[in-house]
Image (spheres, rainbow, N blue to C red):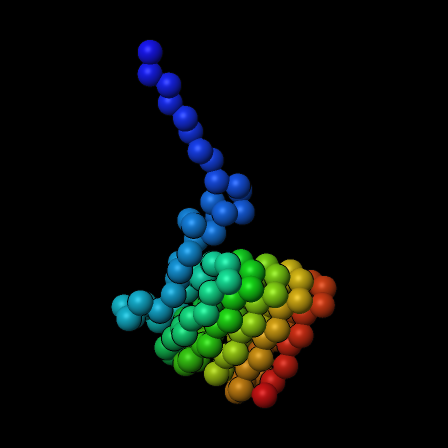
Amino acid sequence: MAVYSRVALPPVAAVAVALAGCGADDGVPAPAGSTITYGSFGTSADIDCGRGKALSVSGSNNVLTVRGTCASISVGGADNTVLAERVDGSLSVAGLNNVVSYQVGEPTIHDEGSGNRISRG
């Protein structure tokens, strides 16, 4: 009789493995008006919003440098740092202790979390 063993990853590790690198800028341009989805844990990445893509960020402990003009940025999770070049529409931040800054634009800001820091400059 054969005995099989099944090893299960803890839920957080399973999600981290499943989401690692999702939505990172892989050099393939997305159509204008589309959404870039980035969900990961403990990564650094460069993302290009091009001219008018939306960016949705989830996970935790990520450091993202965002080039181009984002139509909107939405950040969830905890302890993410997002440094954006330009945001023209809305900037929504939920979760805990996220740091989001943008260089250019006058987005409508929604801070729906706790301990988040949002700034221009």
